[in-house]
Length: 113
Length: 115
Image 1: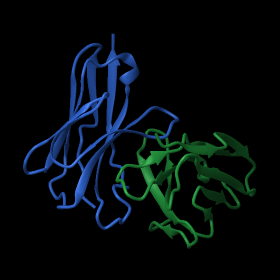
Image 2: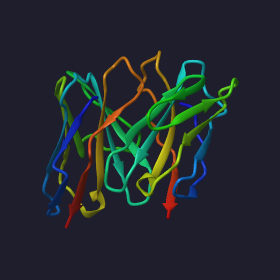
Image 3: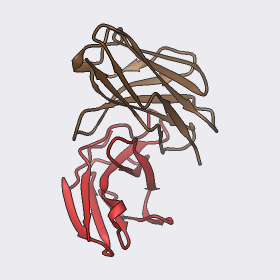
């Protein structure tokens, strides 16, 4: 499975846009990119998933360049409740080998007033 | 959306006892479920992959006789921590896959404290 690298932590003020970039240089052709959010003492929650270009849902946007060696999770106008750890996972869907199962260290986002 | 229910949310037990944690997919059939453990301020570590009707696949370093996994139906997987010791105290999280999608649905986790 592709290894991912993310910043350990980020700080932001309320109302700002936050962009978290994840590097996955050895991503394979069949790998999808998935982002999860985790609050303390809770299980992770799916945020967004993409394969290439841009994906947007009601929560976030995911930007993936043509080479797919990185991806950026964009959270528009963050609030205090967005303070959490964000994980980027890369996995193989076609081989059905467990998808993206290996969580890296994640990015701890702190949003302050 | 898909809901994964995990019980109990918190358990305290004495050293040497066994603890069972249940993971249920409430509105979908999960052919595959995954068990993780997470220590404070650390990331999730995959323990095992559980497939309905077959033996679980354990990650390297995870004792299969210590962490018994049973996936008897398409909606239920259980993790039993046998002869628990204080070092087994951790946050255990299950997740399930619908099979045709790459994203995982997670339970709310179980905080195990062994005295």
